[in-house]
Length: 290
Image (cartoon, rainbow, N blue to C red):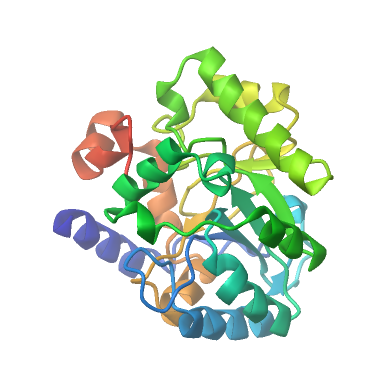
C-alpha cells in the first residue's frame, strides 16, 4: 500500500503541467460513499464535504451525472457531477442537507439488496468495510423517496455489489435487472443510470458487462477511472474519481484541475501484470476498494 501511495504521489506531483491542460473545459465526476463524522470508511466528514461543496459550487458548475458527457462551450467553468455509491443512511442524514444548502444535486447509486437489508448483502458490505453488520446502516425506501423528492437522481448499483467481471452472463443480467426493477418499484420512476461495483474496467466489468448494461435498459453507467471525462468516452463507462477520507480540499481541487489524470492514463494503458502488482485487490472476486 505504501508503494502504491508513493507512485500516486509522484505521478500527481509531476503531471500537473502535462494533463488536463488542452484548453478544453474540464468535466469531472466525483464518487462519494458515506458522509459521516466518525465511521472509518466514510468518504468525508460532514464538515469536509461542506467545505468541498463550498468550493465546487463557487468554482465549478455542478451538473447532473447524465449531462456530464455533453460537450462544453469554450471558456466554461469546469463541470462537476457528484455521485454517491451504495446507499448509506448518512447520505440522507448528512449529505442531503449540505447539498440542499448549496442548491446542488447529486446522483445516488443504490445497491438494492443493501437498502432491502438482504442479510447476505449486508454481510458482504461488512466484510468490505471491515466492520460489523451493525455498523452498516442503509437508507430506507422512505429516505430514498425523500432524496428523489428533493431533486436528486436515483440510479442502481446492482443487487448485491458483486464484482461483475467474475459472474456468469446470467448472474450479471440478474444483478442488473433485479436492482433496476426493485428501485423502480419503490420509486415509481424509470432508473436509467447505474454504477459498476468497484468500477475498474477489465478488473470489475468488461465489454460483455457493458452490453448487458445496455440490454437491461440503462443509458449511462459510471466507472472508476482517475481522469476527466472526454468527448470520446463511452456513456456506459463514464470516468469517476473516488473521494475518500484522505482527500482534503486541495486534493479535490487538484482532481478538477487535471493533476491526477496521469493516474487515469496509467489505469488505462498499464499491462495487467503491472496493475496486479500495484493493486492486487482489484483482481479478487470480492474486491476491496482502494
